[in-house]
Image 1: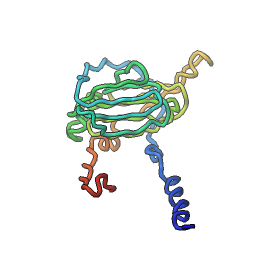
Image 2 (image 1 turned 45 degrees about the vertical axis):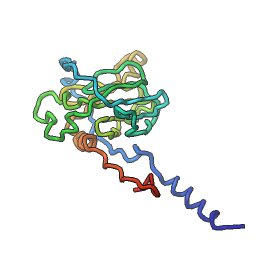
Image 3 (image 1 turned 90 degrees about the horizontal axis):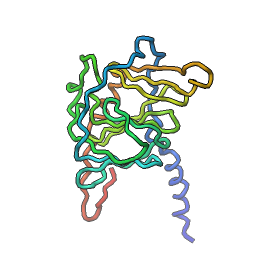
Length: 222
């Protein structure tokens, strides 16, 4: 009996155990209790173009796929849980919890930090071409930028029954689960858009081009 392969099995299993989920290292964010002046409803954001050659497909189980105009899969990943609510661009709520949507290739994020409205009173136009997904675990907010096939995971302040509101200067999270049950509203937290610059810069950075294969190594590891 050949014992060599048997000694390799524990090492292989150990490598699988140490492989971390893509959202495991999401850093904490500086959420704070919202001030009364931040709760006012903002002026509606002008409609942003929704067409484009890219397609994002999201299944009810959280499987997510980005494809180009030729149907080539640019990214295949999953959510921490099942999709619960979906927004696109600067905060327009998408109907349903699954589907396929078109997205553009050219976006403010892809053009670089200089294209973001950093000094403007309304930051939301700089979020054009993004998809924001809240899943049923309600611990993380998944942000997808199809133009670069990048995904970022934003830690949420906690609680259940969460809802998002995209305001000109910050992102607002409301906890609606207490409303109507204890006779008082839930908690409200806010996060300035500028606090998300590291994540937005990452989302705007294209993935490295894959290494070309050869006849002997068609799928190089790298």
